[in-house]
Image (cartoon, rainbow, N blue to C red; front, side):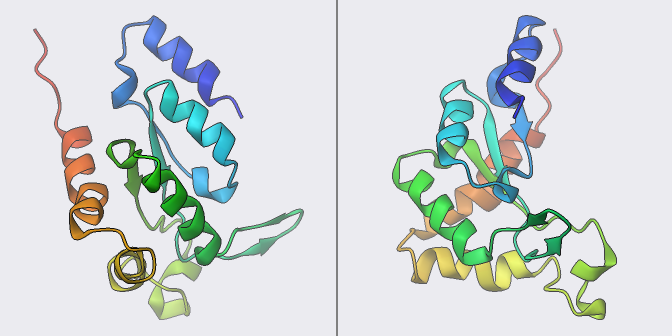
Length: 142
């Protein structure tokens, strides 16, 4: 809930907003808040696909809910500011322990964006390759 404050501090110290990534945003699907972050120039990361856990006082959104929210943001033209992932933070995510595995993003999520949500291959490529490439390329210090 503090992304905008954090972004203001970082940009106030000279960090370019388009190099700041706010991860795990798909754990709480507040599209109004996500739009505010994007409007401020930062990158949204939806990176908990495959995790539909019930924890004390918290339930993860389903992948369907995540995809619905993501598709809405993509239709609004925010593809240049979104990256995707499958956060593998506990062994329950691994296929060996019954989880969906990191491949879930490529085997189920990316194809669903194309076939069920009508996103073009170019948009999916931007989310999975183009945007990460831009963000991982370190600008020259000069």
